[in-house]
Amino acid sequence: DGGITQSPKYLFRKEGQNVTLSCEQNLNHDAMYWYRQDPGQGLRLIYYSQIVNDFQKGDIAEGYSVSREKKESFPLTVTSAQKNPTAFYLCASSIARASHSYEQYFGPGTRLTVT
Amino acid sequence: AQSVTQLDSQVPVFEEAPVELRCNYSSSVSVYLFWYVQYPNQGLQLLLKYLSGSTLVKGINGFEAEFNKSQTSFHLRKPSVHISDTAEYFCAVMKTSYDKVIFGPGTSLSVIP
Image 1 (cartoon, one colour):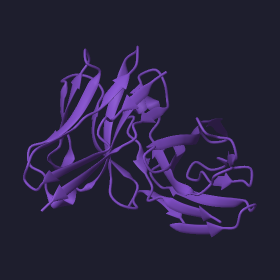
Image 2 (cartoon, chains in turn brown, cyan):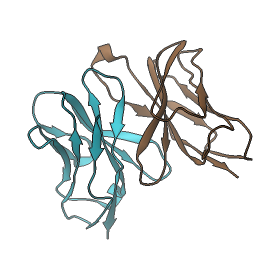
Image 3 (cartoon, chains in turn orange, yellow):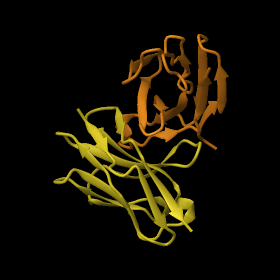
């Protein structure tokens, strides 16, 4: 079955530690996205990538970093510079714009708790 | 800048009753519109989308939405809800010339038996 895998589902870290969230897709999608979800705020875009080896900052990129070395993988690192990292993180992917689809496919999410 | 408003943060409704979840957006340019559903502790799933053509769009699970350009609205409706429809619903907007999707804050639908 094609889809998006995020691991782990729950992640606990101590304040001051960097942590990397995994996102893998086997849909052969060109674009990938990272969102942060907080209660009552909807989804906010952290980073996105339209093609391998290229990515752009979203609306709340401070304190986060990403890489896109392979088409199927888009890991997100939450650094110690992120002031309030505890949240639910969602990875998504979509086919290239040329397909005129525009739908995003989401992974199951990773709930990060930093204490 | 674009924004998406979902006026109702929580909507309780009895089973088999109709429901409407409201979505309004602000944009001076052409947009694509989406409704996504999120079940507890899961990712989002597309319910339906409007790209062009007929303003009445039908989606999965019996949901439909109507695009109203003059009122900049894209309300979601279902004539008869089921317990399994209990979830968070997100309206989203994307400029036709841009790559980013803007999500609304969500509406929590609770179906009461």
